[in-house]
Image (cartoon, rainbow, N blue to C red):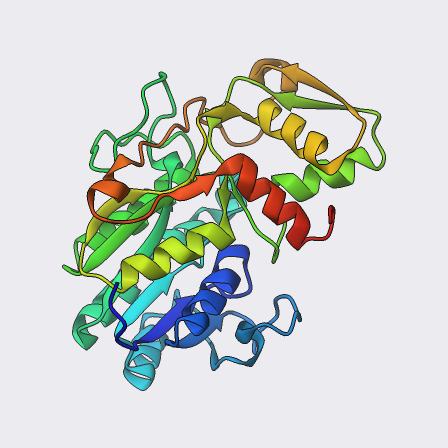
Length: 311
C-alpha cells in the first residue's frame, strides 16, 4: 500500500464505522477530518484520535455546504460513512424525502464535489440494493438490483449518484455491522439477555457479520490505492443466520439464555421487508490484492473484549 500521506474527509464520524475509520487513518499518519451533523464530535469520549481530530459540522443534504467544505478542506480522498440506517423508520411516507436526501442526494453531492477537487471517494453501501432472494452469493459487479424497501432504494440511488459523477470511486457493500461507537445486534442481544430468559431470533435470513474495526483497516487499504470499482466486504468464516450469530454471542460471552430459532414469518412483520439472502461474494478483494477480513467468530471475540464483556 502507498505510504503517501493523504488528507481525507470522513463523514458520519459519530457512528460506528466513521469512528473506527478516523482512528485507522490516524494510525497510518494520514490527516483525517471528521464530519457529522452535530456542532462538535458527539461519539465515544474514549480518548482516541477521532476525539482530537479536525472536525466540521456538515449537512450533507445541502449541496452548497458540501462544495464549500470540500473546497475548504481540499481532501485527496473522501470516505462516506454517513447514512440513514433506521430501516423501519424509512418506510414512513412522511420521511421518504428525507431518507432519499440523506442516502440518495448526499452521495451525489459529495461525488460532484470530489470530482471537482480531483479527489477519490469511497462510498459504503449495502446488500439491501438486491432483492434478497435465493441462496447464491451476490457478486459485486452484479447489476441485478431490486431493493425490497425504501432504505435499499435510497442506498442504490446513492450508488448511482457516485458512479455517475466520479471516475475515481470505490463502492463497498457491507452487511450486519457491529462496532463500539453505536448500537448494533450484538449489544441488543446482550441487553435483552439481562431481562429475558428466552430470546427469539430469526433463522432464515442468511449473511455474515462485519466488525467495523476490521472493515476500517480494509477501507484504509483501499483508499491508499487506485483499484477502483465495486466490492463486497464482510468478515470471513462462512454464511450464518441471525440465530447462529446470537448463539455464538452468548457462547463467547458466557451467558446462559435460551435462544429460540423462528422464521421471519413467525417472528412477525416489521415495517420494512428484510432480505433472506444477504450472502455477499468477497473474492474480488483478494483478486485485487486486498487482505480479506478475519473470520467473524474471531472478530466477535475481539469485539467482546473491546466493549469489556470478556477479558
